[in-house]
Amino acid sequence: AQTVTQSQPEMSVQEAETVTLSCTYDTSESDYYLFWYKQPPSRQMILVIRQEAYKQQNATENRFSVNFQKAAKSFSLKISDSQLGDAAMYFCAYPQGGSEKLVFGKGTKLTVNP
Amino acid sequence: DAGVIQSPRHEVTEMGQEVTLRCKPISGHNSLFWYRQTMMRGLELLIYFNNNVPIDDSGMPEDRFSAKMPNASFSTLKIQPSEPRDSAVYFCASSRTTGGYTFGSGTRLTVV
Image 1 (cartoon, rainbow over the protein chains, first blue to last red):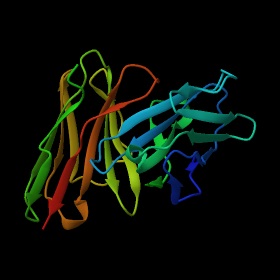
Image 2 (cartoon, rainbow over the protein chains, first blue to last red; image 1 turned 90 degrees about the horizontal axis):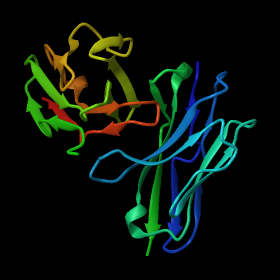
Image 3 (cartoon, chains in turn cyan, orange; image 1 turned 90 degrees about the vertical axis):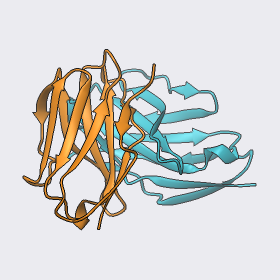
Image 4 (cartoon, rainbow over the protein chains, first blue to last red; image 1 turned 180 degrees about the horizontal axis):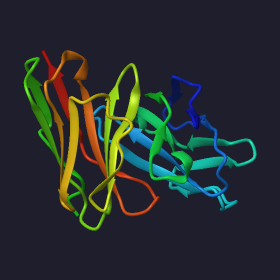
């Protein structure tokens, strides 16, 4: 079965510091997308960043960047200059079997300390 | 762009009652997804449609659950009869390509 694993149920970071959230996945596909979603207490699911597997360059969106290691099937999210508003659940997701069916990890709860 | 619109935002119902959740996808998006989120099981895909046609309903828990998409701008998820274990947050999402979904705000369902 194709799976997405987030090994850190909870993480904390000091405001203005950097934190990295881990994600590994299992696939036999060669071309696919990977996603990070943020879910704040409002429960809205917000797309943070996406990575296309055929691109070697790591995706970046402002303070958010990924470290994509295709051979290792690793897709970590780095948040720089953490802000209080970054506190949320973060989910890694991957389309199952090359379809549109996104499979989500269990999530990492990020706390930002002032 | 109003985003994906779900209603109601909250629903409290008694066991045995019928519950209908509604979703309006983003105009131009041709795929629609229904997810359920619980603490125990996380985010689970229930069913998804492409061009209004159900493609995969393997995640629908049992016959009490049904989903329809009569046109490109509307979908419903119905539970009949509802049970306490159906209590969860139900999300609708839509997409145009595999570039990622846009989620609605979700419906928090409580069955008492």
